[in-house]
Image (cartoon, rainbow, N blue to C red):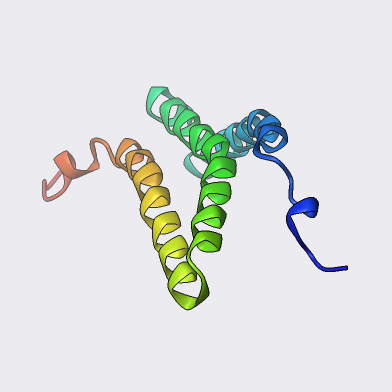
Length: 112
């Protein structure tokens, strides 16, 4: 008995996992920011919320990448699915990094 359409999880059921995964990402990001930066201010709160949004959207991102990979057969389908996943993930992680780096570039090059 191979893996087929009857063994796949429907997206309606998978979307119920978005909320707990987003909450898990939020609490992990909050803990890591407090642990490594020794502070948790407005900028860090915003970064934790953005990371939670990435965690919430990761289920649909993985599902859509799988659909694209199945629609196009062979190595090309895998390459397109991987590229789609990478571009969207970078698009979601980019604002997170910009939030954490906010203000660092203004101080760069100053001699204090």
